[in-house]
Image (cartoon, rainbow, N blue to C red):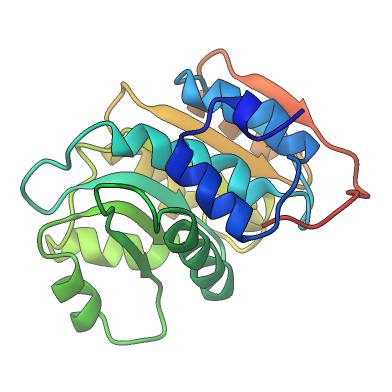
Length: 219
């Protein structure tokens, strides 16, 4: 299997080639075509399996086909448990999108720092918003961003989101999202509480399971 065979656009393939990625990992082979078709995904994927590219690449391709509406809207929201993971994923989106003909705005927001610069950066909205749940709710409470136009939601390391006590925050965020959206859930483990969340969140998802020992690291 090759990256072109997955249906990715030429600008994204150029960015991939620049990273010296020669062939997709199992999670990418399973997830990218489904996401490009607009389907929901629930995936068991360890760190190092290539899961970030598995959702970032098709999300970028889908967003590049449409225009962000005016206002403080986010179009794709990626929820993560830690600021470190948020920063990593934000950088991946920026790397992969660098050759798209129409620039896409990626913002990373998390707590522990002043909220004011993040509120200012959200002026005009964002195409991709990578966030920790608590800080996203803070920004919503300050009317800095609206989730009413979100087309794709990603929960990354979803088991850690629950382990760190974000269940209530996730519930509030999910209630603000449009009913018609694409939802993607990635987790290393699936405890009962997460299975319940996945059932409520996803619509006829494709389930993808990746072995715990990946052959190579592609983020």
